[in-house]
Length: 228
Image (cartoon, rainbow, N blue to C red; front, top):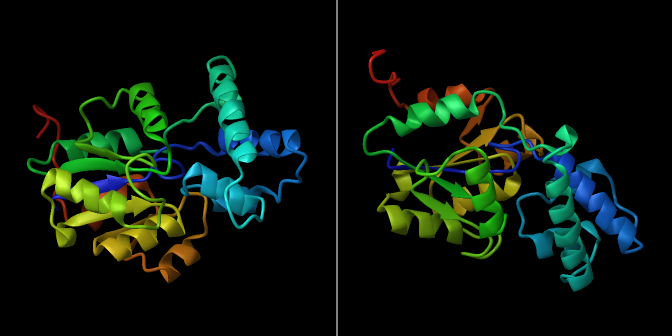
């Protein structure tokens, strides 16, 4: 492989509590009834304005919903410093597997997220990932998933070939984006959308645990220096 791209929410980090909490509070402030957990998680991965409009059943973005969510989310993220229930922890095996992948010479890692760049950078800093990823694609860099723009930009930046690039994600938007870009679509089973939906959209592999990823992509195990 030349390049492995990762979604963030629902794939590397478990952000369900803070995302749903911000959605519910936003809808309350805007005098709307939130359609529930499944619907709320079902729009994660889309850029914010499109996600909120879709969640509200609107055919176009609503500035009040979008800006209210941003305000609420910022406040909740500040609260997360002292409220563990709003934390965005890594899923099991993520830290160790990313470190292992980084030890593969020539293999590059990247992020392709519906978050704005500022949000992606926050997560990178929060988990000490500076220098880990060779490319970071966000909602500020390309059209919303499932448009393949994020993946195409990442491949252009890293010199990766489509057939040697994988996209790992938990949503139908990730899988459809990967298919549209001609790269290997890899689904995770612990995310925010049903695995059956991801397979139906074209997922070539399904991870039951994150440490399965290197083997699924045909990568030999690389031990840390001194442990090989």
